[in-house]
Image (cartoon, rainbow, N blue to C red; front, side, top):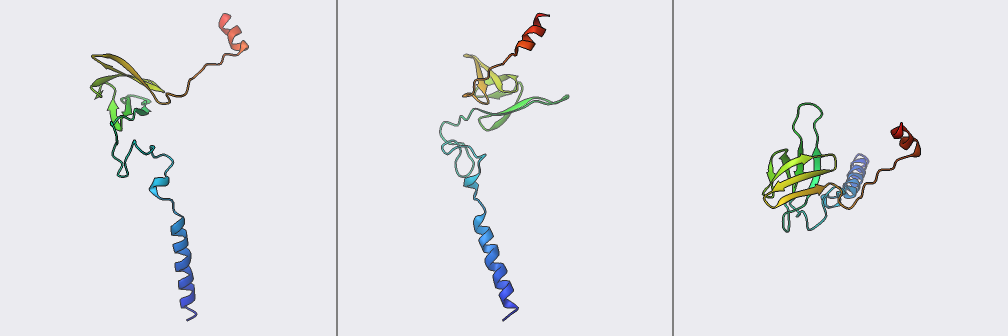
Length: 123
């Protein structure tokens, strides 16, 4: 009986730890509901937008993740050609014109210039 007690205690403790493991639904990097279903497939109209850009260091090809698919520079998505990739945006060109997609569309980036920097530019 004494040998059985440690085994039972280990079983109870391990079951308690297993209950504390978060489920996939608790993943903070998971897109919001309505965009991606429980199985990971796109929901709704299928447009998610720009979620990542990949800029190579040397010799590689730049690419972007748009609407859940990896699109290399010059590739096609949404019936448009990917013509430009920068750190925070991409440009798609189609027959109806150009469309710029931003990684963080709700964030407005402003440049702050110090007085010392302005003096250096004048010199």
